[in-house]
Length: 469
Image (cartoon, rainbow, N blue to C red; front, top):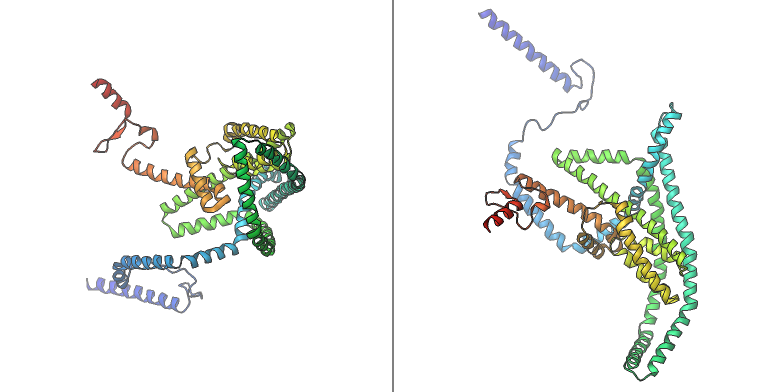
């Protein structure tokens, strides 16, 4: 028995000495095999021993401390709101080329993906020994997308600028004569001793007095302000052009490395959030991309079709300012709901100055064209990309336009559609937890939920009411 005890003690001492020897080798920069290695050659384990006693003590008051710090931060942020807004505006102006680049890359990405989808099988078929077919297809896709973008921009400039020059020239030559004709008719009406003539006399007197006061007091100061801001306006235009050029260069880099950026973002999200939260963020990102992409790309295609149809219709009707009006109607059609009216009103006034009868025909033509767009073309292209009713579309346009202007009117609808989707998802989750139906039609006039949480369908209520009668 004593021999066995001594044997166990000796084995234990040998194991302990071996462990100490390995530990000493690691401290001296050697691994157990005897090879030299750096101290940080292997990643150390961390976080497996649990929080220390000091950290356990600190965690007890951490919640209160965070609440106090957050309250102080919000208080000082409200006091310095003007300074914070100025800093954010400065950062936005600095990053404007990056923002332009991301927007351009987002719009060109469908063209790049389409070219890659059709070109890659052909490259792999006819060039099987090519080392990087994906990179070649990506380069060709980006080149095609840039050529399409520059072609569209050049075509619009070549069509719009000469037409705009001719329109302004015709207006300068014809509008004074049209105004004189209108004044003659007003003078004839005023010469008659009628209530309408007295009304026009009073109105013309007030308008003339207002115009004279405006020329004496405000016109000169406004001209001075315009001349002083002219140089600044030219500088801003040149600056925006430079930002757009840099944005195009940025978009090329973004399109080349879009998969890498996507993987990096996904890696960061999984590192910062719990798996279920990270998966929800990624799901909402994909859903937002689906909503924004489907709406914006579809709306651009829809507006281009409306502009072409408007040009064809105005050419057949032989109306003035055909190309200019078609471009105005097509561009403003990008804005949902209010866009057709925003483009049609100034266009109708412009045509009426040339020929009032043609102005009336134009209004009727636009009404027919917008009915065609709203009931046939728009639903075929856009489908139900946003999932919003007409009321929420109008709400989103008014809110976005009031906060962010023209850009807000365009992006307000898809942004609100994402918010609507998130809210709807949260509400459905709450209803599922309570074992209630999530379909909206289930909550009609006669349906209700008992105090014990049981859903009662409307058909049962109607049956009970009929039975009671």
